Length: 81
Image 1 (tube, helix red, strand yellow):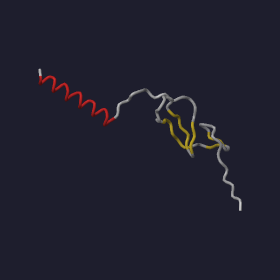
Image 2 (cartoon, rainbow, N blue to C red):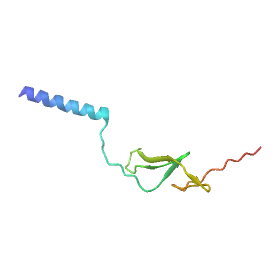
Image 3 (tube, rainbow, N blue to C red):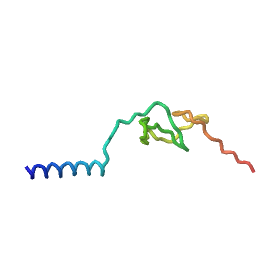
Image 4 (tube, rainbow, N blue to C red):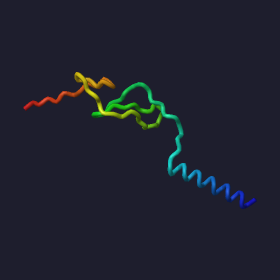
């Protein structure tokens, strides 16, 4: 009986340490339809509280001064002297 308990305890510890080491998915990511923008990129963020996962991060694709994907307006480069 002691051997079974020791094997069970060792198995549980191994499982828990591998979860901590490799990470365990604790929720399904939910990416809503809203595009977010930072710098030269647009992306979708997971809407689950506390999650910082992003998806579809890509550079803007400008046409006529506006990104074709997320409608971000291109910043003009003014050169004033």
